[in-house]
Image (cartoon, rainbow, N blue to C red; front, top):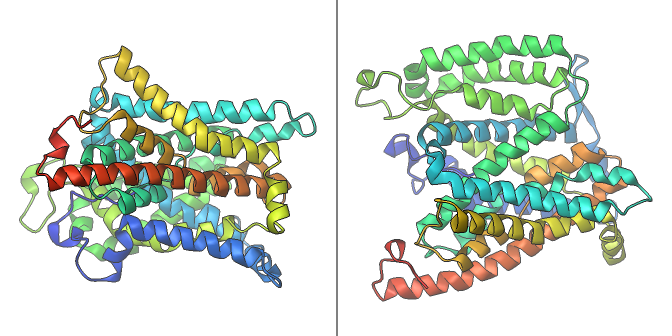
Amino acid sequence: MTNRSPTVSAVETDEHAPGLGNFLRKDLVGGVLLLVAMLSALVLANTPGGDWYFALRDTHIGIDFPGLDHTVGEWASEGLLAIFFFLVGLELKTEFVDGELRSIRKAMLPIVAAFGGVIVPALIYVAVNRINDADPGTIDGWAIPTATDIAFAVSVLAVVGASLPVAMRTFLLTLAVVDDLIAIVIIAFVYTDGVQVEFLLLALVPLALFYVLTQRFMIFFLTRPWAAWVILMPVGVLTWLFVLEAGVHATIAGVLLGFMVPVLHVKPRVIRGDVPELGLAPMLEHRFRPLSNGLAIPVFAFFAAGVAVGGANGVAESLTDPVAIGIVLGLVIGKLVGIFGAAWLMDRFTPAAKDDDYTWLDLGGLAMVAGIGFTVSLLVAELSFGTGSPHNDHAKVGILTGSAIAALAGGSLLAVRNAHYKKLRAQGVEVDKLDVP
């Protein structure tokens, strides 16, 4: 996900203002930290004496209490990553209430394109792994290439696409929001086994409390930045703990909490001059974004991406596994075909239409960039095969390889198109209002 926060006060959302928080809110910064964490993990996992990296990842930290004794890697994937999914929930709620997804007709083309970008990669992966008689269990990873890492995808767009039409960014963001929603549903229904109903019912208590607090005392939390950390966070942690003990992946708790937060003021007449125009969801997204970009996602990537590949021969061996082959083809070809094909069909045969501000070639570049699948793909790989499986390591190699190819191919095409639009802007052409060739 990416930080947009257009609805909080001007002072709080000025991304050019000094300070570490505003620095960490930037799309590019989040993508760079993710990349640095991933590359650091790969280097450490493949250097002599790198055993300490795996020892650290597998070290147990916590107390002898249900839900509070995990390895460092588990804390990263089931604990810190819940912060990221909390922001996903906030942004999804905002989009449904006051964003692109409020008007289904307007958002129909990127919505259907997102489904195409999930279905086609999954089908490609299944097709590749159906012939794997040696290990039929590889089919379990079908959902790995379906995810788009929006933080990294938007970072690529930020680096190479400063002159691209604004409508392209809107399309990518809407696509990613729906993609995240699909990923949440997949995790909830496919990778959840043996639900403990009693803990799930217990989770409803702090979840309901979280809802009441954010709905009834919204102005209090809007005007007192400390209150969310001191009051809401402990309630959220308790919800997370019960959901985890219920056997549901704990990231779902983050999404549920995000959906509890109001987006709009119920009674606009109570707004004073020092209170932001809209509700609590955009504000909380703004306040918690640095924690996600600066800590949760990089730490998760650091402990999830580390795989000992054994040099060039090890990479080659990993990429011969049908798991890795299916992932690479799914991310590089499946995302492009699924997103572009679904969008074209919608434009051709339904009232939904592509925005005239960009071309089909531009949309092809966006579809390629959507093949970057780091964060959620790494999580789904662990859920599919477990940390001790060689297929998990091969899946990680496939994710990194496919994502790198998608980033280079899509980024290169968008860079060419960016130069084209930059030239038009220099000539005084209003790019965002013109049907450009």
